[in-house]
Length: 422
Image (tube, rainbow, N blue to C red; front, top):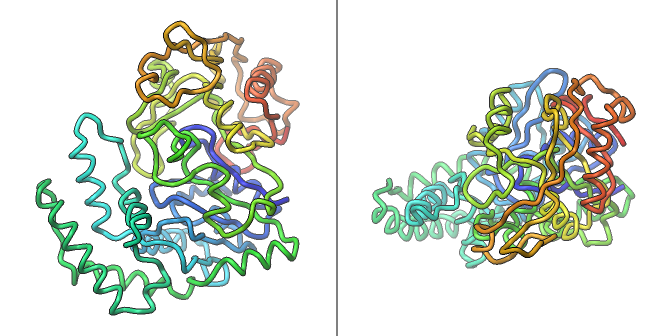
């Protein structure tokens, strides 16, 4: 069954674990948007892998992995990631990893431009990872970006990089940030591209051939719905379409190729970076951080933590067409006597079942909560859905009811084996 895995919150929902779990029955795993600002942590056989651009299927020996045209690729970062994962014993061959020749490139100057924009925004900064993703997508939309296919013409690429470096240096100098030498940028980028070229191909006919051959396709989303550039908490969003629709535009496969959409959410809510977070709770944040949990895989930044927000999840299920929910980190709530679920937003005395578009309305939200009993026991040893405490099953049933989508999978720990099928 061809499946899209998409995040339903502000990213960090545990998508990599669910993708890894479902890869067992997949033939091809596809990453279709975002860049190395995403981070998926997968723990299997006691080994922890942190992936940024590589699809999670790379950890399996018999799967084809595709980085699609909708991804912006930091070539230097990708080479470093390949080397790191290979050092952990994972073979990455050109037959196992395919990179779209239409994918755009993140240049070193994009990272500094990202930082410069954050400086310019001051107190209104977005809280980006400063990985250059936004500026790379901006170049793509402005039709001045570089794609993998362009590197066949070295003279053209050299001229384009030289031009972009000169333009960027004017901005960087004004912000007091380091400037770049075009020759050094070209040398660094060309060196990384040379390492990646054996993997670069036209991935669209490859994917269509797999679809026509009835192979199973698994689309791996990055970030989450509330970071989608159209549907998220704008302007505190990423620069790509993180929702299910982005899987099609970012891979070249049509909507009729999709048979299932699994929406991934935590049993609570987290957010890293700036932007609104109505259900944030300092006590829950302190508790989870005290357990060594909820630190970003990409930046290491502590995530803000809060109670489950089904206003956001209801909206996310709607825009993604979610057919099943994968609820992760249920074990993070094991110690609580009672649990809160946000069921609506009170904005100026009016109850809202869906999140607002108006950015200033987020400042006036009063979450409306429903209280449910906790289960006060360890769920990490559960091996079947029916093993979960009754209160945990009740909590999940209420979550599904409020979101309008059934529970498909439940995570009770970080390991592949700690994933229960509902």
